[in-house]
Length: 427
Image (cartoon, rainbow, N blue to C red; front, side, top):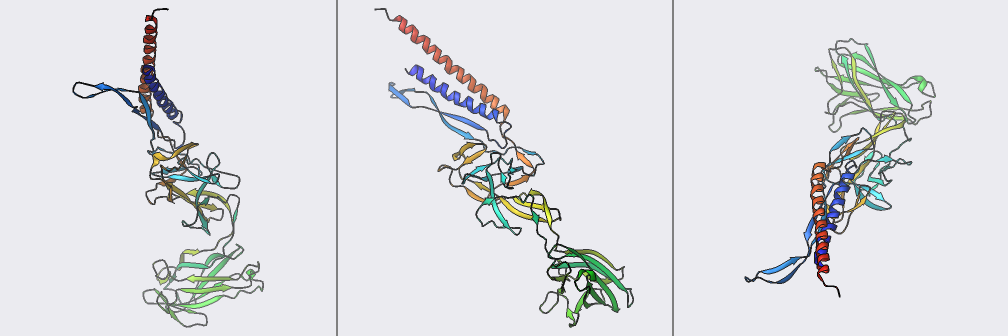
């Protein structure tokens, strides 16, 4: 009977609404959970006739659940201080590997597995772009993000060095000024290189770059020597390498911008040191000058380092994962990828904060954080649930009243049916 069927459709639909609200409230503290709302639509209508004006006389058949929509609005960001936690600000999803199939999630409460892979709370590998030699390649296929826990970074021999120094223009011939810079060989062993500047004439200084004699198997240190010439403004104008000719300092064709510095036969068995002493700064101006001020070195730089053990990692806003080692070096080990779809409502909810694409959602487009409309990341933080408790309680009251009303209709029709049956005389 329609009298029972119609309110039963209401009870079933209202029950779905109550279940949805209950699920939202239960997940108020779930990381990156997205609340849902139920939308109803009426069922078909049966026409019993027409009014005198020709208007159809129709009776409805009840209600059904039309859609259950997910609110993909941004949740609040809560700082946790945990390096493995990542919050996503803006559009997109993290890409995770679920048994060889890519799923998508906004829940960034990651951790590390026994192999150092970044994984979700249910063990799925977090995917991103690989890095080779510290350089991320965003054109490569996605792979698991691996953190080099317990690994040792290999040493790097010094190949370039620079010294920012001033030589006192008031000095007299024969005045020597030694300056030191620590360099590293191929085994990561440090060596102290001493650069000795000696004034030989007005606006002219010789230089000598040497290592301690004990650093060589021969016990003899052969320095790299030459001459520097300055103009009346104290600017370095030319360099004469040992046994060479005076060459202008600069970047034009034929100019000199670097002095080769090489040492062979190191006592520790390391490879020969072949370095370039850069004479120019980032602006293209010489870093060694001569003015009337005490001779001093204000800065030295070099690109070598000793070996180092892994200490920690961090994730930048663009998703780049950088490992830090005990030698002070940092190296990119990968970059978290993000994905998005054209129709968010078409995605399937899998539980554990995961989503899957469908024909309705469209294929996921994968890219780097901050590009193509994708959001950015915040390390040491998590996105909270976007459930609005006030709105949920309001919807809960409405759903409760609707359920009670439909239940009342069922009991009313039951009473009417019983009365009708009782009106039939007994045979």
